[in-house]
Image (cartoon, rainbow, N blue to C red; front, side):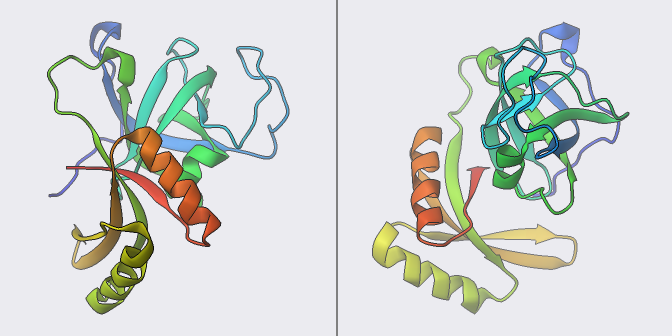
Length: 196
């Protein structure tokens, strides 16, 4: 399924809606150890973010629209102050949705506390690799299955290219975070993703 996004940020409807789309950026070492706008000390290894208007403490699910990977962050700072950008992520948050290299990415923000009841629960997986050669994905699937159990290969089409994504389903966000930590200790570069 193709994902669309708008380059101009859409507003939270009436100031109380739960979705916003636009461009995310990240900030790291230059600000590490400095005070944030809510007087905390910025730790680039925490899952936090800066937003221009959301109340401090708001928890937001940030989804990278180029790869479907998501991370939950807490707003503790103000910014970004570059036109067209809607959120500034910590280094750790940006790494989890694979936007360190590009520096920016189109994202969707979902305010977790404002999500209406009755929506299907968000499902999570930890992505361990993405390949253009299906056999490589299957080889990793087999290697992971011996230690981690249920492993899935899913297709993702980006333009004319097809990627084979190797993912391990997780029960919830906390379980996906624990799984990602375990995979990282084993030498992998995991990404926490929301999936349909």
